[in-house]
Image (cartoon, rainbow, N blue to C red; front, side, top):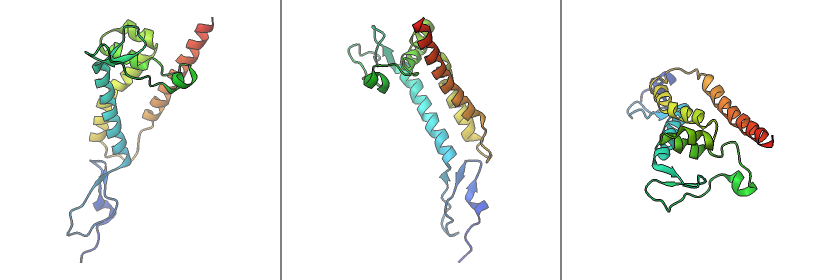
Length: 171
């Protein structure tokens, strides 16, 4: 019986894969994705889903709801928990309609639904190339800190827009 492979034999940094438990040398090595690779894949598919949904949906004539393209009577249920339970808009209220308006080339409508929706839509559009590049070049163990700061910046932008909108409405 041969010795089990060492840690260096169990890691493929180019693919972002690691083998958690060594296997005897007569069995093929089984590499599983690292947590970072799983996160990149999840965000890639999520962003592609959001982009596809923006093109597949339409805003109702009253501007309050959304439904599938080609089905004028169909309407998706309200998804904002804040508006359903509290009757108050949250920082993200209007983003779905803003994304849909942008997908259909209506910048004015997009801005009317959410003032910073275009910024968030741009962030979603940049996700597929960023995630694909990250998956391709996942050889480094050091994770950059700028994606985290970028995400927190977007959250701050949403909350700031929400607070400014309430302040402007009170004037």
